[in-house]
Amino acid sequence: MAGIFKAYDIRGIYGENLTEDVAKDIGRAFVTFLKCRNVVIGYDMRPHSKGLFDALCNGITMQGADIVDIGMCSTPMSYYGNGSLGADASIMITASHNPGEWNGFKLCREKAIPISGATGIMDIERIVATKAFAPIASKAGTVSKKDVIPGYIDHVRQVADLKRPVRIAVDFANAMGILEARCLDGVIEMTRLFDTLDGTFPNHEANPLQLDTLEKLQETVRRGKYDFGVAFDGDADRAGFIDEKGDVVPMDMITALIATSLLEKQKGVIFYDLRSSWSVKEVIEENGGTPMMSRVGHAFIKQQMRDHNGLFAGELSGHYYFRDNYFTESSAMAVLYVANVVTHKNLPLSELVKPIHRYVASGEINSEVHNPSAVLDVIRKRYADGKLIELDGVSVEYKDWWFNIRCSNTEPLVRLNLEARDKPLMEGKRDELLKLIRAN
Image 1 (cartoon, one colour):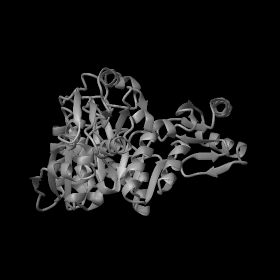
Image 2 (cartoon, helix red, strand yellow):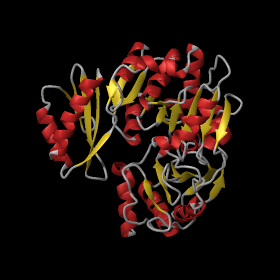
Image 3 (cartoon, helix red, strand yellow):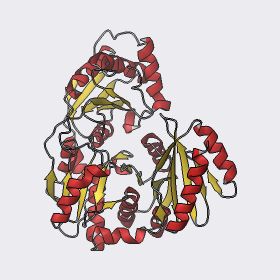
Image 4 (cartoon, one colour):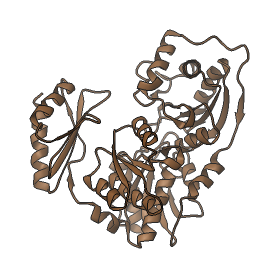
């Protein structure tokens, strides 16, 4: 059980630190902590997901809570199931993009509000570790089945507003995007890659952040006539995009494009990941929206969206959050909004992105250090003449460049993201900061 309770979910290697016995205890602890009466549970296609589901159900029903089994589904579908069914809580059994030997649980309260380390996961860990469960209920809970996928499909398709037919290539990585993309059937023409469910991931890791996983999709797009390409991650709560030339589109550029589509019909607050390009904020403003910077991490972003009734948020990791999906991810909605923009503007995706590339970014650079918090103190003092933002780590803005430095939640690492108006300035400031960071 050691090490499976993370900042945003529970995740471990099946058969080692995550077993059926552990899953049963987590089920008991979940009900003990939340005092929930009904729980929506879905699971992905990994070969051990169903066994973990059965054990989790055993623990939950022992404590007297009822279960709504929504079966195999994407993580966005599980959030939709939680919200649309008015459940007290939900659990999605998945290890997202991790390799096939991994599995885990994504936990939510009512209204698909996520439970993070700070808001319950550590409490659940303590209950499991000390066996401090509430007494077994005198009457066990029940298990009923509900298919939420048709409702989710209808829900997502409402955002489609295509001015012409759209053709895309989609890499499913043998994972839950296969179900998520049912929302696109009959709306967008798809060429499908690796579209057989297989939780051993026989073709490649289901992680669009790893650029080598996109190579087959890029080849397919370059060989055919497509509007763009899409790659889903393992549980389909993230999506990566390829333009019509087969080039990777940075995920913050997709945030800006989706914002333009949403803002055509309604104005409101749109959040952008603090690691995003300055141009994202500018595009939101230019289209009549109210830009707000968000922390990194889905639990933080979703709470900020709720606090400000945000329309949409985009994260640099490819998570796209919509108020219309209970302030949670919907990769299928993201695909439809990108398709909307391409057809409304009547321009290829590469041409739509080109004017948003206004600055030069370093990308995220990790450095191993002895004392991450001491590094942040050094940076604060050295760059005290800039505009300091401490939403997540340390961000400092100047007229022509900015940077953010954050500490890893799990390792002695600091992560640097930097952007400047031109390449020489970016490279100079990047090297200056890395020298400071790595001297500590």
